Length: 123
Image (cartoon, rainbow, N blue to C red; front, side, top):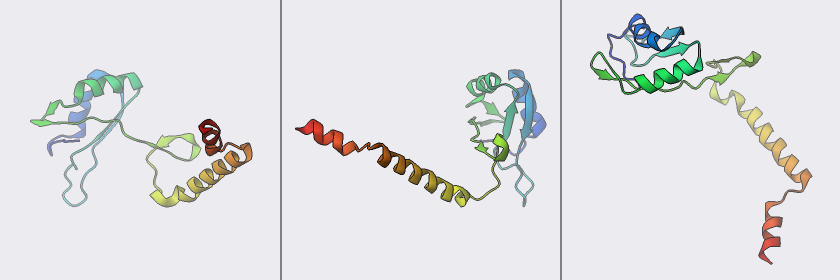
């Protein structure tokens, strides 16, 4: 984050290529102004290269502005691949609730009552 309006994908590519081979460079644009939104994504071929870029480019200066580098947080999508999910955040709520309920049922079946252990240790 913190990219100046003048930063292009080509410039960002040139700034990060010294750290390793890049898969992709993307700077999302504001649909109204057609200017960059102040952040971009740089995808490396190798994780170690991404780590080195993070260590060297976080708080670096581009076009007179200090940039912040963070790892993107991809979400799992169908097929076991990683990428940006195009579904609403509430789409997995039912699945999450089912997993919690299943976990509680397992605990009840196993007889793991944390209070039983506490009561036994108090006497």
